[in-house]
Image (tube, rainbow, N blue to C red):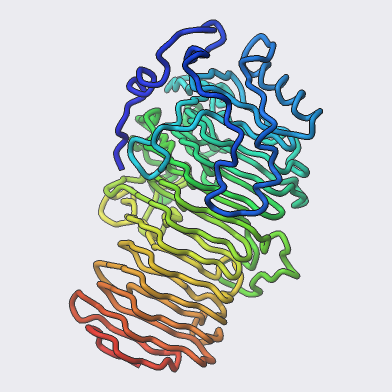
Length: 522
């Protein structure tokens, strides 16, 4: 997924007239700028809750006093807070911030609308740019302190902030983290819409581990810190955002890790600090059941924060080199029309920054990870590839397509996988139980094995019921498996395999009808 415009081209195209240069911004002349927008940019999605945002209460940041843009932004938010919230409008231009930015309750930060409005178009580029400090790696001595960079957009009060977020802003070297309080207290109605992110990552605080002999200058990407993370007690929108390949990643020669062979002790590799080796978009992601595929699975009674409603993740374009491109936990989540691309041939000598990787390592490299009940995953387009292990002979584990597994999860209940296209299998893996699953119209091609994998049993001793599953009218290159005990009211119908004859394994007492190109096994 190539970037059509370099940063230089972007600045040349969007930031043509210099003014207020001492404050780190280049703006269009006011006479050339359109009036501040007062519309709801998400109206086409027909989400009733977005009407609660005060879109028409707009304050232009360039009219505010302050010594720099952080100061002006804080003053603008104070004025809007006194009026019950609203929109801080940031005209097209480059805004330089030296530290993280916080958003208050009821506040939307909104940039100018891009000329091309579809984030899946390679030319998509919101003309309002937030620029944060670059991490200037020094690969000697103590290295450059982590706190000199890796900034983000945060909430001033994660427990209460509602009707808040970002619209139409390009972010360079910053992530978005609209969090919740430690006890799961959280506001509602949070939005990240129309934004473009590059170099969005956080450094792992545990690296370097001097106890294993790592060098003080070593750095590594934090495993579970997404480019965009949104927590909400109800209603969230992550839509029309674009995550593009980063250009700040740096190579560390002589990076020390613990060797797999204990007799060797440690090994040295040339390892990249990879800004794109982290989750892409996540909403309410949380462990809601027993880890490691054990029971009990989560329920609204045991994990109420894992079954929050009103999450919509749609129309995004996501580039990632590893980890989940999209991950969510909720009840009734809609994940639709996203374009997801992982590159092939990535060599990952270490997965978490400490140990030498092997084929049994895990990178969580998946287009979508689903958790919870009644999700709808529809019309997504993905390409995903497993990374190479340290020996460069074997691929690391993972590389599934769209995955709901039992690990830290709920059983599957009344969920839908419809009209998705991809090169890795649909993985409903040892879920512990399925009651209601509809898989239809997907086009899935794999180079071997199953294209559609539905299994509710943990193993042959620990069974999981498989009920009310329909696998219908899918196009595959690869086989189909349905397995679970006890089983009832399952059907596999009208599916077509266009590759070499592939197995159709029916271990859930399913009704089979009009399937083409499969070898039936029971």
